[in-house]
Structures are given as structure tokens and as C-alpha cells.
Amino acid sequence: MKTVFMYAGQGSQKVGMGQDLYESFSEYREVVDGIQIEFDLKTMMHEGPIDQLSLTEHTQPCMAAFAAGVTKVLKANGITPDAVCGLSLGEYGALHGAGVISAEDYVAVTAFRGRAMANAAKGLECSMSAVLGMDSATVEQACAESRKAGFVTLVNYNCPGQYVICGDEAGVAATEALLKEKGAKRCIRLNVSGPFHTKYMEPAAEALRKKLETVEFAHPQTPVVLNVTGDFYNGCDDLKDILEQQVKSGVHFEEGIMKLLEAGAQQFIEIGPGNTLSGFVKKIAKAVGKEVTTVTIDTAEELKKVLEQKEVYVRG
Image (cartoon, rainbow, N blue to C red; front, side, top):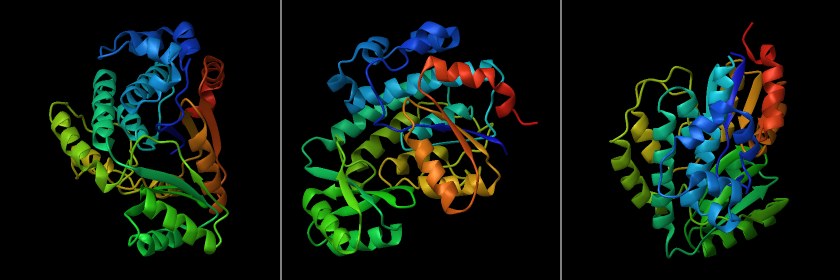
């Protein structure tokens, strides 16, 4: 194993995302122009405004279109992954990269997922907080001890020393206070629109499952690392069941990267926008004494550089 395609999650969207890619690569344009959903996707990506682009129901299909377009350019130029992974929404990108779902279904399903998650979050007063400088076991224990104040759980296992908790405001606040007593460096509130990857997403999970039944899934052509298990897809479990579970369960990104490193992954291409996942990968690799290289594709210039160095990413 050599090269991993790694797909970004929600949160790195920005006005103008993909505009230079659209102008520079015909394959990218073909993907974006071929998407038919309830709103003008290209205008939303290129012009915003940011408050509309940041709505979950808009963010997810825009991120998906960006990722599908970049993936098509890479593959058209002979760069294919030895494995794929993604964070939350990015897992759908990974499945597309592995040939499980088409670009059209990828964007359509994530658009539906975004709406379902937004609907499930309506009326809920919940918070999300990134905990820095603490191990996952201590964070899990603090959540358990704080649940008498309100529901709270660990939802994102990002990398050593960075984990995200989510739940009722009272539960999150109690957990933050307890973790600070235990020595956490910081607890940073995140600007999110709902309690994602918690039990509160059960209505979204049920709706998503019905939507997935209308979509054709192929067997992965490339090894896929999954969020729910933090391990490679074993070929036996139903991927639709796994995606239903994923929207209401914790994201085990750190464990998944560990599995990729153990399998010999050396180079990670982050398909953004953004470079958040590359930072996580570097911290995970450092913690286990592995050397990796990462590259992010956020702009046309970055994609051109990857294509110019094609031989680096092709297994020799």
C-alpha cells in the first residue's frame, strides 16, 4: 500500500470553493455541471453567501461535488488510491473514490443526508466542544461522570490529544469543567448546527436508510476504512447499515489512520477543501513513530502540482 485518498468532512467549506478548479479542469466541470439538485450548486459553491453555504443541507452536497470533481481529475490522469478513508461526510467521498457509488448518487445522497440531519437538529439546544491535551479514555470517563447534568458523549476521535464531545449544553459544560480539572489544555466550542453523531440523529438515520435503499452500491474496488469501526471494511457487513449507524455514532478517525499506517500507507492526498485531516494524520503518525507525507488539494494550483508529480503517487 502506498497512496491513500482522504476525504474532508463538513466544516472546511468556503465561498469560492472549487472555482479555480472549475475553470482549469474539464473533468471537474463535467462533474459539477452534471449535478441536478434542489438549488444552484455551482453558484452556492462559488458565490455563497457563507451563511447559506454553511447550512448543513447546502454544505454536504457542495463538499461532495468538490470531492467528486477532484477525484475524477486525479483518476483521469492515472492517479488512483491504494486505499481510501474520510471523516464523517468524507466517508461518502471515500466510498465514491472506491467505486461504490457514482458521483450523481454521491451528491444526491449527501444532499438528502444534510437535510435529514438539519431536520433532526431543529429545536435542540446542544453544543460541541474540542478537547485538547487529553487522552480518549479520560474524555470518555469524564463524559460518563457528567451525564447526570445532561447527555454528552465523545463523537470524534480525531488524533492523539484532540477529541470532540457533543450533547446537551449542560452535559457538555459539566464535562468541560471536569476535564479542565483533570488537566486538559483547552476546550474549544465549535460552531456547528446540530448534535451530529449522537443519539439525537436517530430520525436522520432512519430517513437516510430509506434513501439508501434507492441507491445502487457496488463492491469497493479499493480498501475502505470506516468511521464506525475504525477499521477496514470486511466485505461482509452491509455498507448501508454502516452508513445508517455512522450518522448517529462516534467517528473513529484516529483508529482508522492507525490501521492504514499498519498496512503500509505512506502518502495521503487530502481532498478538501481544507487541510485539517492532514494535520491529524501527521500527529497520529508521529505518535507511533511512522513517517508519512501529506498533500492537500484545495486549489487548482495544488492539483496541478500533484499531477506534475504523478510518479510519486503511483505504486512502483
